[in-house]
Length: 267
Image (cartoon, rainbow, N blue to C red; front, top):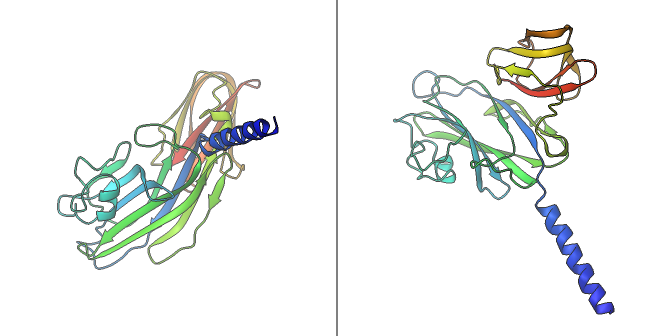
């Protein structure tokens, strides 16, 4: 009997460990960085760039940014092979760029912001654990390149980081913010629409069926904008141009019910 109890206990423990190992938390990663300008470049400040999500072991998860052209398609070899293609062509159809911002060779170095909802390229929520945001950037006709990863933990707890500036990237911020109880947003008050999202100019519009106030909060829980509303349907515009790129939260209430919307500022 003791042997049986021991075996059952070990089995129960294995099940618990298995469940924990495959826990899946909803949430949003917001990652912002500024490219440090380099020279010489192709022409002016032209450069190519890829940003993607990997597992802790380097397995491909999802592409977020890919910028390259016909003449620079072989200048992002690590990204190309990791996303499913050959090192000589990051523009190949076999390179997975589902859901990514994709475009031609960049004409300048600048600030970039990406968000990730915790899903892979198939839209499936991935297990909690350690992940990496990886950047590959190339300039000087392909002879100068940098590859850098930033590690974070996707899980039920928030992970906020401000990595140090280096010779290639400055103003780096990384924030994983879990959602509550496996739902993306707490949509209690109905009839609310927020657009555009992300916003590239700092302006957001809110359509609402009935509300008494609106509030915008940053990642650390500070209210950066509040406005009282008439308790009737309407549309307002919120100006967040004075604030940094990143993830914010809009709360709209009618005094009893409240809805939350995640918004992304990407000027």
